[in-house]
Image 1 (spheres, rainbow over the protein chains, first blue to last red):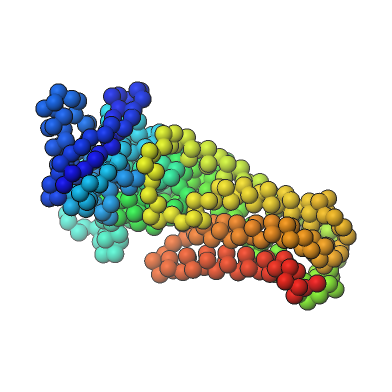
Image 2 (image 1 turned 30 degrees about the vertical axis):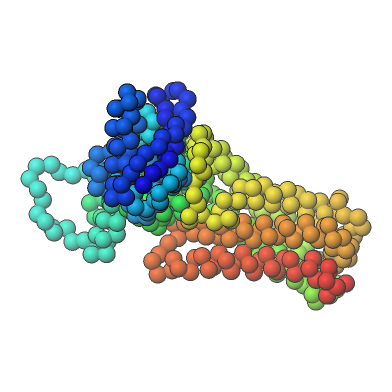
Length: 248
Length: 226
């Protein structure tokens, strides 16, 4: 299949970028990233600069490969990361617009690669529990209701790719922050720091320059792990409780 | 108070304040709409209702005192709602300076959610006009204090004025739909058993209030009221 790609090219963080048009022959069995690999091989063979894009596991669990494809983060299939998107979802002759995540908090490093370290900063601010180190604790020593464990796991499925920020009209990181706060807040081990966690993570989220949530719900659709906006309501509740009810 | 200020500093805190003031404002428009429907019972009933609003709380409170207490609460709620909205809009704009070349495909958001801010500004303009029109009478061609039915009759004799009210109430409907649903999320009111009722409730509130309001200008235009 023949494709016309409009790829965002930007040499570095503080230079102006622009779209470059490339023609590429792809095989429908290729993944989207393999298609970009083949474009890069061609570019390299012609002594041109290959397109920089981030990738690692290529099986949808590392969260590296975020690209906005035709205005949709991670492309047209739901519940998948860019690496799990296959070229059979496109048609011969299609024009494809390929852009990086666009958010002030995610500056472009090069071409399609953005700096997602503000997400790490949010986790560092409170997305952890304090645990005794040493030998592993006994399994099932702390009883946890099955439903809670399942729900915590749904939130913990977040791979930190940043698609929620990319899809949000306000470039808000609420779904990410809510998922990271909720998967701990749902479990007994997460209770001691629950209030503090909500306060610290939200304050870091705001400081990092993300927008506010206006409940459009675009994040949930873009999320490759299909994390529900219900976790956002949960974080709102935790923050409210932590701010108003806290004893200190 | 320190805690409330601290909470307000965060984006979520601003939204919680918007949701809480929103609850007050939704309560008000619902009450206002029900009151308006007295126009269908005739001039005497609705004019008497207007007098009741001023007499509310009597004999403990004097003439118009409770009404003014309510008005103060509403004015404060309105101002907080607008300021928080402006601040959040600013935060959102700063969070995405560079736009997508191929604009985002909207899959989950609604017309109502995307027009919240424009609709809000339009409603602000409408509220100012409406107060000058029907409360102070400054912009009314033949305003009579306490003559509510007469004021409606004269105002909605003009197709342009009635049309403006209809457009404003459509905007209110959209604003209420996203506002009510969004309010549940913001206040953290979610539960697997009740979540499915939130959207229908938001539609219900929006439709009932908007239809209740437009019934008056439409009835004057159609000659059902005269």
